[in-house]
Length: 157
Image (cartoon, rainbow, N blue to C red):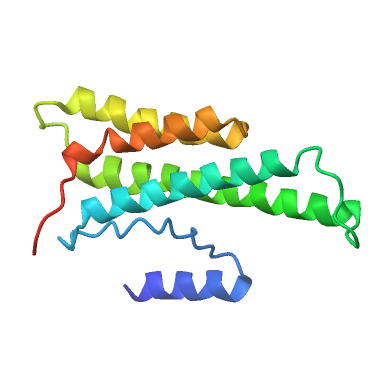
């Protein structure tokens, strides 16, 4: 144990110890604290944000500049909407992978293959929502997330 602490201290001193970014998908310790329905609701909120970003990008496309605004201001706002889409789509991917697939989908479930397919469909839809600003991609993502709801019903505590 002392050797491990010494090695960690050395890596810290040399700046060689890196910590992975958190996935905001709860934890991966067996805490037993799960609110699956809330996670699905959060995924749907992410999908709604992606749809809003797509709508805003479409609205800005070809729009004449507002008085007093420079072209770079419009580009800046477009970039911010694209970054928002990326962030929320990645959050969907991370939550499905790190929370649902890693912790809630179990190989011994009788409908395991179906669950895997539906969770995978969410990941693919989120990836596609990153690649395009087409409203259909955001709608596909929303529907894929909604297909998970039966697995994670609301529980009254």
